[in-house]
Image (cartoon, rainbow over all chains, first blue to last red; front, side, top):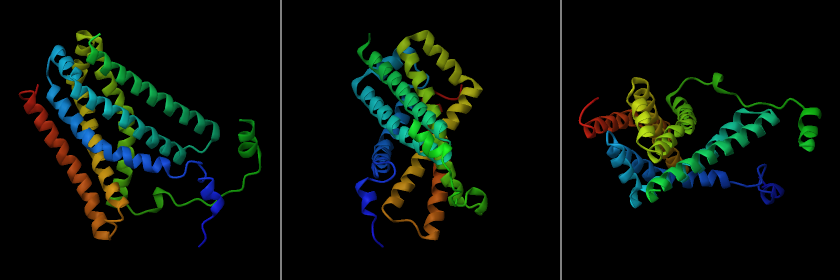
Length: 124
Length: 142
């Protein structure tokens, strides 16, 4: 079997080769320790007062772990939802609109969460 | 956009052969777990709004945070959180299964079944463990 060279040079239908596939693997590996850390942090914060929650969430180590979790997860879920959309949405306009909505949603969620953590950390 | 429309909606389109979909396959655990992985990922995508809400409320102040606590403490909030925990842990274990497959291991029939079962049993067990630890950390159910 011969590899269709023109496709390889053009990196396939998406023009990005296996980039999404690979980045989904990288973010999934990073996601394992980060998810475990998130679960531990949430359990540690259960039932605590607002002041205590803010103090713990704002401490550098916890804040950095939360930021890493959110940014890593945001990229992972952006690729994942894109994959679901191209699998099931075949009508072109609806597909483009869905892909755009995916990007908007992920960016909005990630910026809101990151802003919240930074605000808690810097205490302003 | 004009090019896109000309190429796809107004141009002649031949019916292309489609690969068989869900309905033609026998229900098997591996197949169900594959579906669970996608569905749990889909659910987590929207569930992340809860995480964002919690963080924004914590940043906004005690009153906003009290609202989140009230919702999370209600029976429907607890149910949503339980589902979120299970989806998160199931997606994590399902992801580990995929990472094992990426190394070209675990494809034998018995191994596939074992991995699928381990994902399900593991995610349910881990969810129970997390919730028991969570309640213990809070000093009992309330």
